[in-house]
Amino acid sequence: MEVIYLTVGICKQEMLQKKNAVLVDGVILNGPIMDSKAGEKFVEEACKIIMEEVIQKADDVTEKVCEWRAPETLKQILDLEMRDTGESHQKLLQLCRDVIQYSVKTSHPRFFNQLYAGIDYYSLVARFITEALNPSVYTYEVSPVFLLVEEAVIKKMIEFVGWEEGDGIFNPGGSVSNMYAMNLARYKFCPEIKEKGLSGLPRLVLFTSEECHYSMKKAASFLGIGTENVYFIKTDERGKMIPEELEKQVQRARKEGSAPFLVCATAGTTVLGAFDPLDKIADICENHGLWLHVDASWGGSALISRKHCRLLHGIHRADSVAWNPHKMLLAGIQCCALLVKDNSGLLKKCYSAKAAYLFQQDKFYDVSYDTGDKSIQCSRRPDAFKFWLMWKALGTTGLEERVNRALALARYLVEEIKKREGFQLLLEPEYANVCFWYIPPSLRKMEDGPEFWQKLHQVSVT
Ligand SMILES: Cc1ncc(COP(=O)(O)O)c(C=O)c1O
Image: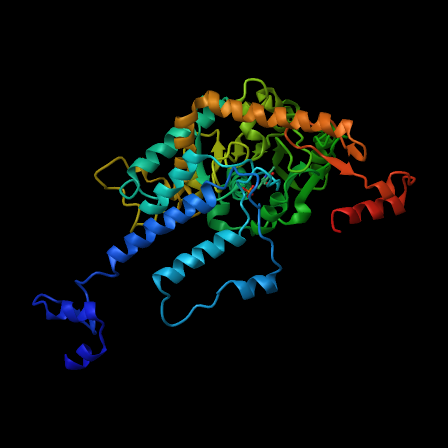
């Protein structure tokens, strides 16, 4: 005992003097894990820094978007090393300030990176709440409120897709949603794959457009389908999949003896913002018995707008849809749903592992709310909550205004580009993507040709 007294801190000494101290291997088990008063003070002061340095400066155009430093310089500025002993309260607060100072303020009005749209205060607060509560949406007993919220949000999103019923799961991204869908379509095509694996299967082939998101390739390689078995369908001058080309490729795959099983259409392509003709693609899928997945990670938000939802005409005919409210709707990264038309438990059948320690079937509540077994994850964040709180705050009309405003801003930018010398619009946008070239004065009189394009490509780099 004395030896222990010599090596413990003041707090531990006090505890040991208490009669009821429980000591195991030199560890006091019934003492505080950490100094909660100091912890609470740290949270309070750090929140003040977040409020002043991130949130209040978020809409101030006079503030910098980022204090950019090259990696080697930044390594010298920041104290990145982790040491044996912890840092002081003041040092930690300074570290927080440093991190904020040299980070990119993605909510800044002059931050023009891909697919960001600004700050939403309600979804931000929802994130604070969930970070503080630290729930995991695998079982109802751990996340009663958040699971009901997820159910309500998925139901509402399904309504906007135009299905009478369906299922869904929030997951860490559009890329993951696409992967979920690809695997689900394959499971539907050959359910025995879950137990037997890939051996003995025919060569499975899927179809997507040349303009699809790169996650299609990733998913195909990750799932063992192989990138060569992704047939990229030609697009028209606007970047939309050409249905006749799809038909040809499906027939080609059949002639080759392969097994076509899935078409992944895109509603809102990443670069051009193109919407594939879903109705015509759905006809082909129906004729050939193919699963139709629509990657509406980017374009799905247009469903909320009565003015622009026609862009996704035919989406109700899809078997699954990926939709990211963290993009145009501002729900904060990550907030992504995979929606599935099937309501017979396909998602669960495909993904469940029935872990007996977690998903006991004889719990005292409706275990269908233990949605964790529908997921490829075990621990899962309650991402639907940030969308829900934001939706509660703005109402559907507020969300609709957000979409309409984004598209109106795109129109405005197009008009400005047309007026300005040296700017060349690539195509009239149908969504919020505005693609244009900036031609510097030195190239404006140059003839179109390889040299011109080589020089033009250097413009954004230099
Ligand atoms: C069309 C499309 N699909 C999928 C994704 C991937 O989404 P995430 O970044 O959430 O993985 C993106 C992202 O840019 C996208 O534009």
